[in-house]
Structures are given as C-alpha cells and as structure tokens.
Image (cartoon, rainbow, N blue to C red; front, side):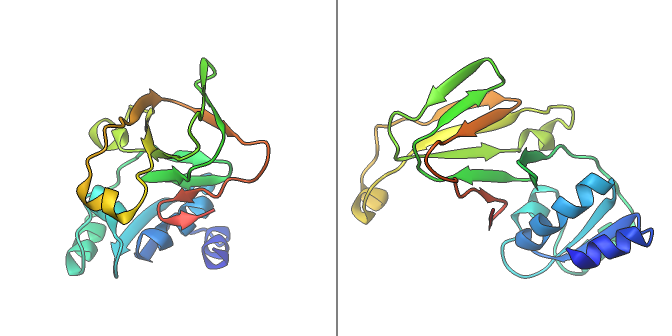
Length: 178
C-alpha cells in the first residue's frame, strides 16, 4: 500500500497490480479514493476477480493491458474497505438495516450473510448488491449427503448497515479478512 500511495503522490495515473484477488483487494482501498486507473495482471492462485472482469491469465493479460481497454465498474464498500466481488459476514447475532427502509434481525445466529457485487458485470449502471442470507449446514455428513430444506433469503439492495452490539464482526472482502 505504501508503494502505491507514494507512486500516486508522484503523479501516477495508472497502477498495474501483478497478483491475485488478495493483492487486488489490498490495492483498491488505496486506488479508489484517488480516482486512479487500475490494471490487473493475474498470477498465482485465486484469481476470481480477474476472471469475473474477463482478464485472461499470463501473457494474454499483458496484451489486454497494452490495448488500454478501460471499463468503469461499481464497487461495494464496507466501512473504509472496497470490494469488487463479494463480502462475507460469518454467522453472528446482528441486525441488518436495508436501504433505510426495513431491517432484518438474525433469528438464527447460524446464518452467513453473502453480499455480491455481481450486478455491475451485467449492467454497469446497476448500483445494487445481491445479498443472500444462507443457513449454515452442520457436520460433514450433512454437507456431503443430506439435502437441506432450508432456503436462502435473497435481497436486492443499494445499501445496508450491519449492527452487532456485543462485538466487532470479522468480515471477509474479496478473500481478505478486514
């Protein structure tokens, strides 16, 4: 992050990240507030963000980068952390306020909250987030062989506020815990 901040201070208008989802996730928190263009060359494992954006691996990523194809995308944001793909809130007792219109209280603390930023891919003007509340399935046997009758709840929202009065909630954004 310090290297990126220094280069932006020196006048860089484009930053090229060579790495995976974790590297990109760390960089966007610095790049976005400065309105700098981000280039990506995916290497290593866990490159779902590059794949989602249609950026090929290896030498073909360099060809894409040299073509200077620039595309604006919407980002999700949790506190001061941006995310391209998803945010995951582990099972916790919490209240979720959606679009300042309604709220959901976790009745069962064994539900995981997934917030997906996928709508940007189909429609860059769509600023909503797909939010799923998924029941947790207990035990290896149940995960492998038993079909659950519990349903996930799917919400299409623009903003949400998660409140937990007893503790900080460990959230994972684009594979990185914040």
